[in-house]
Amino acid sequence: MVERIEQVEVGDAGRLYALFRQCRREISNWWWVLPLAAVCVPCRIPPKRGLPKLGRRAVNVRLRTGVNIRCRLNEVYFLLEVFAMEVYDAPEIRWQRLRTIVDIGANIGAASIWFTQRASGASVLAVEPARDTNERLRSNLARNELIGKVDVVRLAVGADSGAGYLVSGENSGVARTLTAPVAGAEVVEFAGLERVVAMAGGTVDLMKVDCEGGEYGFLTGAPLEVLGRIGAIIGEYHLADEREQSRLFEHLESSGFRCRVMPDGIHGGLELGTFVAWHENWESSAD
Image (cartoon, rainbow, N blue to C red):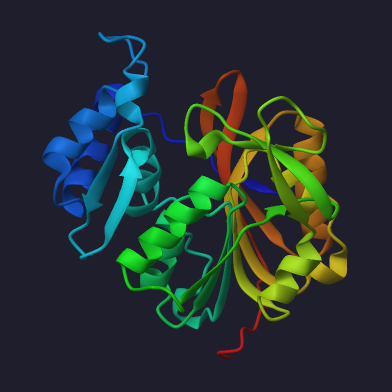
C-alpha cells in the first residue's frame, strides 16, 4: 500500500519566509539573484505576467559550499528545490552506502551536483535529452570539476527505443518528449530503462526521475527484473490521470518497492508531487 504524506498547511507568508531563510543559508549571492529571478515569473503583483525576456538572462549562482552553477534566471527555482528545499533528501536513502546514481532529466545539473555532495562515494550518470541543456549541464560539471565523477549521455528515456521528439517550454524544466513529430520539435534518441541501467553498470543504487510526465511510460512498462536491479527511485510525479498514477505505484510495489507519495499541490489543474520508492533489503556494492 502506498504511503501518502499530506502537506502540512502553512500560510503563504510563512512558506515564503521559510524558503527565504533556506535560500539565504545556502546561496551566497542570494541578495541579487533571488529578486531578479522573482520578477521573471507571473505573480499577483506587477509585473503580473513576469518578465520572460529577463528570465532568459544567464547568471552564476554561488553556493556557500563553493559550488558555482550557471543558469538562466527562469531556472533559479530548480536550484532552490535541490539545494535549499532539499526535495531529494529522503530519509529512506542510505546516502553514504550509494555507489551508483542515475539522474534522469538531469537538466543543467543541479541534482547531479547535489548527489556528489550527499553521496560522496557514488558515481553519477546524468541523462538529459535536450541539446542546449545537455551542453550547459556539461559546462556546469566542468565548472565544478566533476567531469569523470559525473558521466553525461544525451538520451530521452521512454517505454521504447528509437527516434522521438522534444518540445521546448517556457524554460528548460518543462520540455516534453513525444513520439510523433510536431513543428519546431527537436529530434532525440529514446532509450528504454533496461539500456540505461546497463549503461550504469547493471545495477543502480538510486535513480532520480524528473521528466514532465514521461515517468509513467518507462516505469510502468519496465520489466520487474529490471526494476529489481534498482535500489531506490525518487522523483517528481504528474497526475495527468489518477488511474495512471495508481498503475505506476502498483507496478513498483509488485516489484518489491515500498512507496511514499508527497503531494505538492495543484499546478495548471494537475496534481504534482514527489515520490520515493525503495527496496528495504537492498544491498549496494558497498555492503
